[in-house]
Length: 249
Ligand SMILES: C[S@@+](CC[C@H](N)C(=O)[O-])C[C@H]1O[C@@H](n2cnc3c(N)ncnc32)[C@H](O)[C@@H]1O
Image 1 (tube, rainbow, N blue to C red):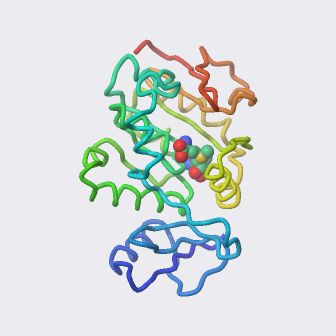
Image 2 (image 1 turned 90 degrees about the vertical axis):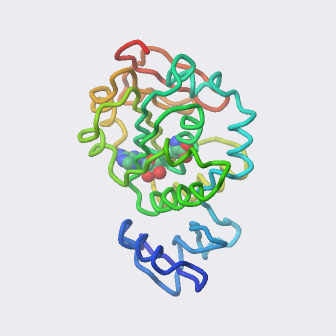
């Protein structure tokens, strides 16, 4: 897939050049298929051949993200319990499959220090841009202290990053989620990222790096990662979180 960034006259040229350099994108003035584009001061993922698809971006200040941060279950959410944030707030977490950073944002907003690892250059660039806009928002001025991005393969990060309390894994899996927004994003992700056929190999190095636990998000109907039964599972509204415990929190 071409890694194109369609820059508009409104985009900051220095910033666009740094995005191209960091994420290996080629600047273009005409694009087809999936590409990154500049829209209203944000980097978006777009497919000109699918006009109904709409733009995809990382927006930590969006209505949905804010609503979940302010009115979600907080430390009683399944993801928080699975990671142990109901017992200790300031855990260090490596989210080795960050995607659009939704889960990482929930974990960071509950107090965790989160390193987001994303290997796909288009998705990593969206995350980078989401962090940039969050840094400029007064409501989210805490976010850049608690969320960091590493554009890398998970395996590489798991082998070379300093130890963390928790490793969080959410590899791609055929989904059955219902909302229009999730469907739109799932389609984009399946086109752009594909399936994570190598996900099983992440469990063993994740167990090596995590001093406390590894948490694997799976759809309720899915089998265990690497066919390894977890120590326990926490069931959420749409997903199951399999927890592999190394030590108590
Ligand atoms: C299902 S999405 C994660 C969604 C994320 N939890 C969220 O809340 O937005 C999976 C993401 O993990 C990334 N990914 C999968 N395998 C990876 C690997 N081995 N190394 C780094 N990133 C990986 C994919 O590119 C994709 O963006």
